Length: 245
Ligand SMILES: Nc1ncnc2c1ncn2[C@@H]1O[C@H](COP(=O)(O)OP(=O)(O)OP(=O)(O)O)[C@@H](O)[C@H]1O
Image 1: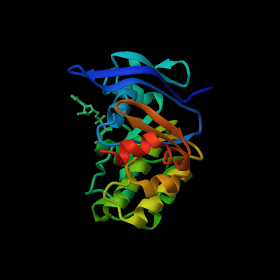
Image 2 (image 1 turned 135 degrees about the horizontal axis):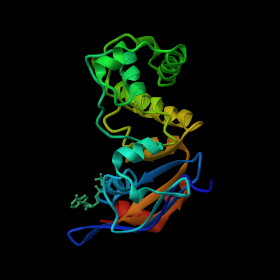
Image 3 (image 1 turned 60 degrees about the vertical axis):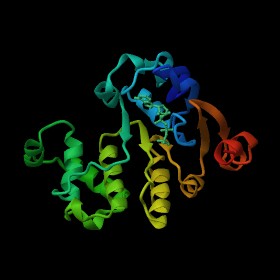
Image 4 (image 1 turned 135 degrees about the vertical axis):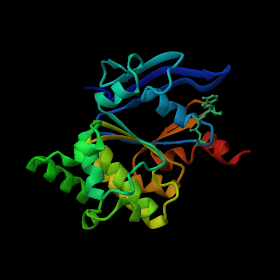
């Protein structure tokens, strides 16, 4: 496999306004890629196109080289192995952390059925492993409602990992987090990156720095610059877009 995710010449207009404008992007298998860009750069629209929520007007969107994502709907794309974490956590607060992960394992089965279904040893080990990974093992039996905002985000990332997606799309994970939580989230994503390709959109530059990965700067729906953060942040065009108006 050459590319985990490949976008080529993608354009999407809303009422004549090009939110995405001839966008090309190539994410290698195993990569951790950070996407930054000012408000309105097209980051959310790009994620929506990858996950099938929005259809591009033109352009190629490919997963694992050969899968044309524009032919599938949102649910099918999730089943193909692309998981998306939205900004707002959707954990069930009245259930324990463990039960939230158990539900995520069950996928679309009903809550009642899923929670009364007897887990295999393997499934139990998997939940234990994921809850450890997201740093919440000690709180497994507590209600998710007791978690801080940051901890809920980590649980949610864990719930996504339960589905074993090959490609993980993460939308502004550090929003609303404390500085400490932000750094821990960067460390968590780096850990998860050992087994998963990750594309993360974020505004927080301390977070991006901590990720220590290749950065793509979006502006007006296309790629303005790409490379190491030290390099793109010294690029005069990037500086102008962030500071020059
Ligand atoms: N459904 C829509 N209808 C009309 N315009 C839209 C729609 N979705 C996005 N846009 C416009 O497209 C542009 C790109 O928006 P998008 O939300 O993708 O940017 P963004 O980079 O995610 O911004 P932010 O950092 O503020 O989340 C914006 O000007 C936005 O107003």
